[in-house]
Image 1 (cartoon, helix red, strand yellow):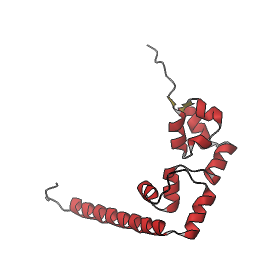
Image 2 (cartoon, helix red, strand yellow):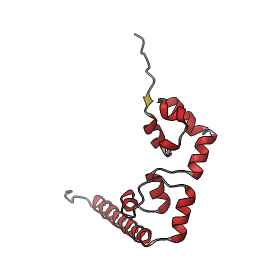
Image 3 (cartoon, helix red, strand yellow):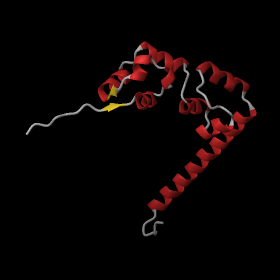
Image 4 (spheres, helix red, strand yellow):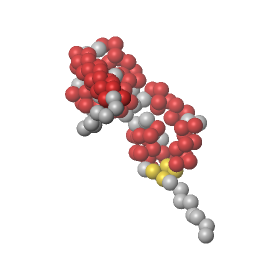
Length: 134
């Protein structure tokens, strides 16, 4: 019995998400085709110039913008940022540091602090023998 290996493919939107780029900024042939797992691996291992340029200059998708600004995606929306931003626009926001960005960064810091506290609490609970777990 022989096994037939089917090539795993994905939609361009999925591939763009995995590559961390904004799909409408990618080349037309990328947007209109399908991407195999091996093609995605090749793009990640040896990115073409268009991919290097997009990663460096943008426009960047919201998850990347949020990470670069140190806020959540919801925080971006609360701040009125709903579209993709270039690296230059992100740097400008960092320099200007508007009130909404300052507030969202503080909120994100609190969320991280609380997550760390809960993780420590759960680790300490797991180390105690015989304690009932919720």
